[in-house]
Image (cartoon, rainbow, N blue to C red):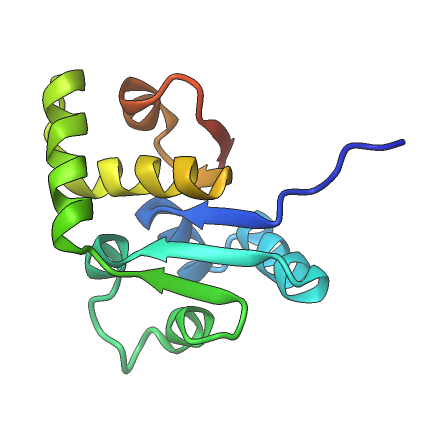
Length: 130
């Protein structure tokens, strides 16, 4: 039997920016997710890092509002967990921490343009680089 595909994929800001710029790998990943019913998870802070001009980012906004995409809110509890993770790993990027925690929670692969920062937060994360 072949390897099973993940049912959930977490996207970081680099992945969203790659999608917006028309990166073939990112566009193919998103098409496959929609075709297979896989869920794309985007932490809310990532949306804040990627969205700059909604009138010009039509494809990105369509992806964020698609039925296969879930934008996860940054709740009080999650914000504290992100701060604790940053404290333990001596890092500062709370949004990256939210990506790592989301990936843990969903047992998901993270699509990222910066695997080094995410590895500092959690060396066990499953990462796909764009």
